Image (cartoon, rainbow, N blue to C red; front, side, top):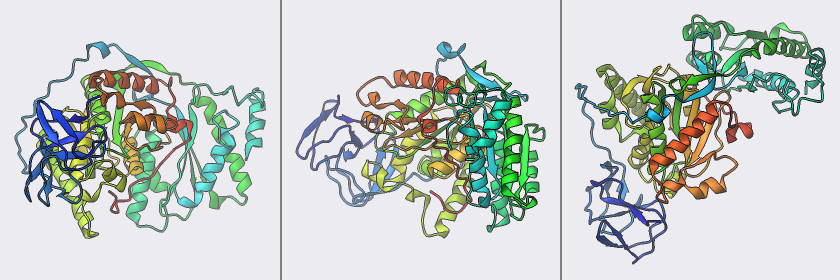
Length: 534
């Protein structure tokens, strides 16, 4: 295994692939470097002497400025460099040229998906239970418990009602643990919320919009909705957002308002019976072979490290480019982690309108952060910094690799529909849960999520495939990691790893592989209320 890596010929920083010691001599391309300090794996050292205000480069672009003199062979740290990104000027020329990857080997591949009446394709078939306000979270979870465990989906009270219904359905009540009666339903999933009342009217509308996006998602067969009755997120508001989302929405829709019931037990019994009856109908759909062009992936990273931009993120970028070249769609999110790459993003936008929209969204995000005496450049976490991502521009240039090199066909705000084909930029925070929630609301039917440190993040209705940037994390966090990109660091060709990753995506989309987050019942939902979140 090589010890160091120069990512781009224009760089003046070299990455340590393993721990290096002070006074150790390393060689790259015939040039010798004697280290003036210990260099932790994933961190960087200077290739040449740097003066104060000299620009430091990685991935061929500016990622920081020296705040002190830095000698050749010395480690760069938060003590001697600061965030810096090249200034952006709007160029209205549309000149970006893309050479799509060779996708001949994938052209006739398919995955087993659920085709909805409107032609959209799901990678799963879930019944979704959701509240319009936080005080209904308990009822949502109780209904899930009442149905999910007896029907073989695990979880846990109110079971006796479902057991009696199972007997009427002629299914032996003790057979559910190993024999799901509804073979074509992949799960009964519940969403909980932290708002819906006591906030602003805009918050209520935003919540209803995201819930409507989830209800309409092709991975959802039907919905059961709980309301209290006096919340700001009224049923009429939810229905209005559902109609905006899809004027032709026709999925089964069960609604219960608690203040209309004298007895909660009666309401829950009715909820179970009504939902059970609809489950029998939702079970009629079966998976069918569909082309890979029906994949709409979200690409995300969290718990990133100094290898993210070298292994996992570029591998995801190759997968994204292949899916786009096949006619599918990809969504790159996390706008604070595009801080420092704005020039590249603007150059790839295919319309002047999208160029302007992207810069406007970034400007608004920064202004909002400034209002609270911070900046979106404050995104890197202590874990990021400890593992080599010491400026937001270093983090961002590596994070942007997830989006490959395809042209950007759409720039959309949080929860707005991503493009049906091609790469979209979806405005979300870097916050893992808020970002994945937004990507799914925008239409992603599978999320690929890279991590250097490990994270259990999942989603209620879309599989989240967790891929490790390094083999140490893949082994240490094997209960949450689905795929290891670490061999790239050991010298295995990036294209080979990307091909293996795409095979894993196909298995996941077909229901032949269950992601670790689903095994752990890690069904995270957190919508962005537009307060500052990095």
